Image 1 (tube, rainbow, N blue to C red):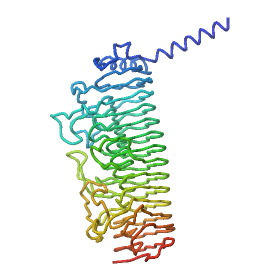
Image 2: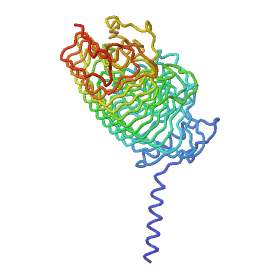
Image 3: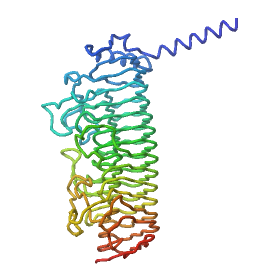
Image 4: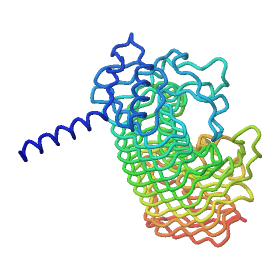
Length: 496
């Protein structure tokens, strides 16, 4: 009798568990490129949410769909072999209403394959694929231009809480692949992103979010791969990015450009940046990738408390780009123009970059507004070298400020320094520096301009440098520079 009761209980539990799964084919979804399954899948989502939540299951096969509206307590689960394929008919991906949280990107509303706003306890899981059919996604002729032209994202969550995205592959978005805007308590783990189908093909945009963990994932993108943004008034705060493999034709790991809400308490660790596997020329960017690590405040906002460690960079034109600028773009039309932002309390350690291009790493503010309290330790920059005399300006006064321009190292290309260029900064510490190039480089290894409080210690080596002076400074105060091992030229040359 006891065994019968146990078996009966097990059956009841099994039935209860299966009752939480809502198979889309039970709601009329059909695989194949000729079937449009928007209505059927949305019916499954609605039923799941109304019945207390559970999993909406997409089985193996290709299921074409328009916009899916996730609801509270729903997990969209793609089984192995399942593909959710976006329709390329703009009518199937209608504009979603403007949301309560306003941002620089929402001037024409939103289009997305998977959309959610102001809901909680949602997930996208499984080992299937979300394919945005990006090459076929065309701009809305009634929309604005550029990245505001109405092309659909693969995933867009706005002002949502308790989100989990795990295991899936995302590819070929119409624009940004996945965009989390003003969201809280988000975990993205073990995903694979390949986004080389259209303009503005970012990998993941973490935008004004709080409590966000991204881990154990792979990205290969035409535009920026892992991007922190604050396109509205909310800060990106308490963010952890770890154990990721990243490839991009633009910026591999980046904070910016939009910075209105700022960035606070950011940890980035144990990541590999490597060349893209995409054999086709970039839609935008460079074949090597523009930059490995980029930190930017250009539209106001405060960056405070950033820790970056254990990063390996292969390729990229520039290993490290840290920029405080003053583009001052407003996040909405009626917002006040943002003041010059603040960048401070940044720690970068254990970074090795090899076979990079010759765009020198840089830390630059603007006159009267300084990057403060930044330390670099155990950093190795190995470039290709081979820069020819006359291919760059050796006059630091001719390195333009460009404080209103778009922030990336292509604005300067080959700077007068080969290893590190520091301008408009206070309290900068460099400890444990190794510089080398595959071919000789005539440029001065390190240059500082308008810097107060600079310490460069434990310079292990500088190989293949054709310069006579290791360090040059203009208008620098409280500076201490160690002589590199085996360096035969001068250590410093000060010009005030």
